[in-house]
Image 1: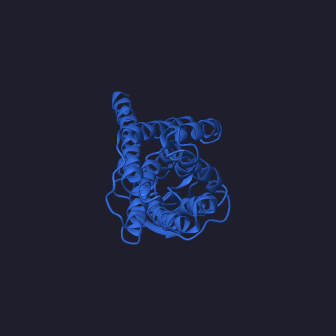
Image 2 (image 1 turned 45 degrees about the vertical axis):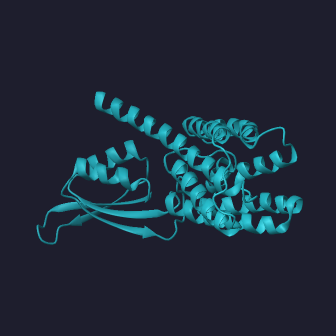
Image 3 (image 1 turned 135 degrees about the vertical axis):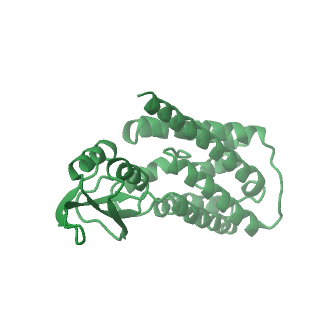
Length: 282
């Protein structure tokens, strides 16, 4: 029991640290690359930049915080309390770092700023999503939409962010909008590389302890299991094959369960191109 408690505390500390670290990355991205080049960031961050240009008396960081309050309420009700809490931690930390880190010109080349800004913002956004939070705003809306299809999060980010960028282009010029689209595309590719929850895997586990394996798996992962009778070709022992479809994130838990319940089990893991039928996405 004490070990589980310590593990839980360790996980919470890790989530908090990642949320704050990702906020620092985003703030550096904005103040060193995107804002000096007049290239807009993704989601509510980009919208906050636009509003700060229109109403200069309020900073980008403060606008970012204000925009995320109603979305945080929606996320608290629809996505999850832990997810929303750490997302808001990320937003609040981003606001803080934006205020204390000075704007600095690293390069005069707009394309370089757009590409490197996209890479860094993608790393920050992908990391915070991978550890159970987000950078707020559009991230929460995209996660809600992703629950109802098998499309990756990057697709939703790109679609919704494109609407924001087109609006920015109409206000500040289409050339800046095109540079912003370049940054968004790079960020969406990086996010898809880091955040792989939409990737499905099929595990075929040949085990002598199918009942215990299924019980522990249902307790920790909550996925359906199909059991197939089998016989060892060499040992002639009666066994079972457990067929399980999981996300790539759940593979970590599956491996630990197999090592704990039946270290001698043989497991074949293959990537699944699609799932037809009920598959929990939350």
